[in-house]
Image (cartoon, rainbow, N blue to C red; front, side, top):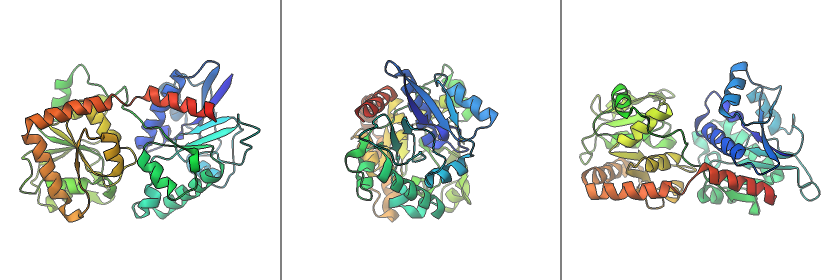
Length: 378
């Protein structure tokens, strides 16, 4: 029996985010799609009883769970220094948090480590992260440069960005994500829409006021004369750092009540919010993949997105792209693009069908099969 040991620590992180969802969905399919005579085990930092129960509930097919004696932060620092490494074998890390060390790739092919890099933000926009985080990501990327057998990235955009900064050579593999099977319409969409207070027609977005997400420009677009007369509904927290969404909207000249924040939404509620929107907007200034675009596509919602290279790559013409350059004019261009979709029924219908078709090209099962093939090739 061959065991693939998967670093799944992000699932139980205090802020799992997109990487936590990625780790959960991909690991579940790795278990489901495991070839004959192979199984999947998990690697984590030290867990509480509740965290351990969460992992085993989310991933019931794990054959075992290798739990470090170190807490997550201590484990990340130890692996950065090349310490506290688990034994050999096949290891697949869902991020750069990985036990990277020297090993004999030629004479011991069964000992291999694959890491995942979701975006190049630490190197193309380091100012958007804390200096400590930038140092950690850079140190781990350099360890991956020396010791990783392969590096999985979600898009050709990220592959190119990494190739400009690190010498991974032919070790980079592009394997994207997909929409969670949990993101489906529930049996009671009307009741959920009423409970959420969703307007009859609205613009929908997900994320925070993190400058990389472009929500500031989207909110400013509401005050432009060309803006559609629709409210903006945001799935995400009310603020980011010291910035409050409603205060920011008021300062931007947007009328009170025009921006509605729903906080974190459960999958069923999120599916309802996507599906009932007149248009979904992905205004991100940078992206590694752009999963929300595919999520909106899968639920038949027309999409307006930035021309961030990864978003353009993933959308592949199924959405309406908006240029980010000339930051001062970006809100105006967003307003005009949104209005175009909202007021042109034929265009909205075209985008709806092209989006559904594009979403069909992504599946977690396919991603898992490609991961298994990657390890077999190594």
